[in-house]
Amino acid sequence: MNRDTVTIISKGDVSANWLKFQHHEKSMSSPTKVNEKRQTKQLYLKTNEERRPDDLGNATKIIHRKQTKQFNFKNKKVVTKVLALDCEMVSDMNNVDMLARISVVNFRLECIYDKFVKPQSKVGDFRTRFSGIREDDLVNGADFEDIQREVKQMLKSKILVGHALHNDFRVLKFGHHKQLIRDTSRYEPFRQANGMKSPSLKKLAKEFLNEDIQEGEHDSVEDAKAAMKLYKKYRKDWEVSLQRTRHRNEDQKINK
Image 1 (tube, rainbow, N blue to C red):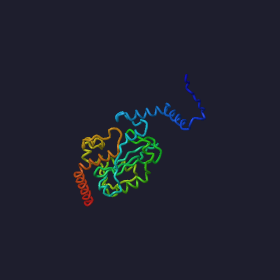
Image 2: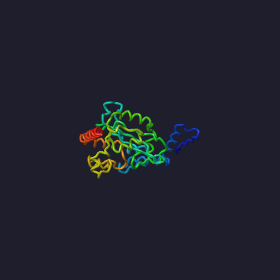
Image 3: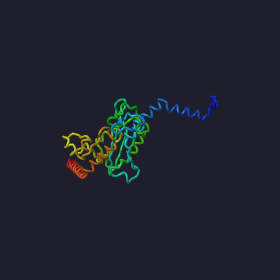
Image 4: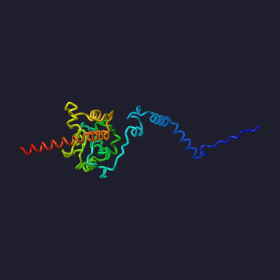
């Protein structure tokens, strides 16, 4: 009768490769690893409607934050004579607004500048529901002073379009020549359509462009484009009305 030979191998005889393999198998089968893999799989299986901002992983941020194609703002051909600007803000511990994101689009509706900004002091409220800003967005943000310098240079001698631009100037901590500002919240026909009150950009986009914006979190690129579209649509009448106002003011000065 044949007997199978059993060879007993001591622990010290086990090869290093075999020990590494055992360790790898053990780590991959641990509850923590299995749970992480399951969570990752569930995250990618979710539809866009089911994904929430608080889902785990960097994939959420990629899904949530649209990738904005940017043109080189240092290229003079890209920086048109008319630009539109919009800012997103967070608040500090004293509920004072701070710049968190700034976007600029040109007359062709191309995004030429879109940057997150490092907070100048501790953030008290990210206002994510409205601003779309999250803590991770600002970790690698640009320095405020650099943003201020670049944007100032870009806007020099340019017609600037935006909505309620005084709020943007407040967090940018600089102003712009009054005669070069085209503010959609102050344009008379838009105010007349809103009972002589300052209309929201969302309302203007719907009423005059038939577009839905700010459906949830705000996006400064989208808002800047909406303001520019409004200006372009009514540009001729807008500029004519400004010319009349200037001539009237000049006549009044002469007659004094």
